[in-house]
Amino acid sequence: MPMMRLDKFLSSQLAISRTDAKKMLRQKRISVNGAVAIKPELQVDPCADSILLDGRVIAYRQFLYIMQNKPAGVVSASADGSVTVIDILPQELKRPGLFPAGRLDKDTTGFVLITDDGAFAHSLLSPVRHVEKTYVVTLEREATMEEIEEIRKGIRIGEEQFRPAKLRPLVQTDGLPQYEIILTEGRYHQIKRMFGSQGNAVCALRRVQIGGLSLDPSLRPGESRLMTDEEIRLLAIRQNI
Image (cartoon, rainbow, N blue to C red; front, side, top):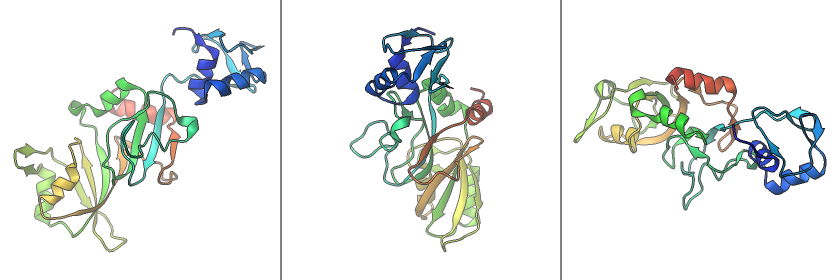
């Protein structure tokens, strides 16, 4: 691991500005290997040096892995003319290089994984891995058994052949039929197109799971949090990343 400036380390690990990092140093809140550090230009080894804030170890994170409960009306992109999933991150989680690993339509809600680990995201999104994504879809009308079987076997729309999907009805709670649908691919507006080709409209769509990892039910729409090491390992193990 290359050496880096102490203020840069603090900024990247605490998701604060360099100015705030220097303020912490002036306040003598930072120690390196047991000695109080006040110089922002001090070179540190993130993997070898013991760096503490107010006596608590700052565990080095080379990459961030963030779980977000995306609300409707927010774009799954790093930058866009509209509000993005990056824009609504809390300030303490923001740092350069973050991007959503995969996209949800603007009006689709639910689980978005945000990271700055390109290799991890590529492995998770690679079409050859067929990572399962689980959604709850609310439809305009109930799907017939013939329509359900068509989707389960792999629906064809024009020249496009979609992979088989898992589909099962859920207990209705708001008057409109809901289904759980599990895809192993992520084509443009795929779920809307699949049901639309059968003359059925998607009224709402929510992603609730990626691979074996479910969206934290305590996250309200628009909220985000760092994923735990166990959650990161779960995704990596399930996909052999």
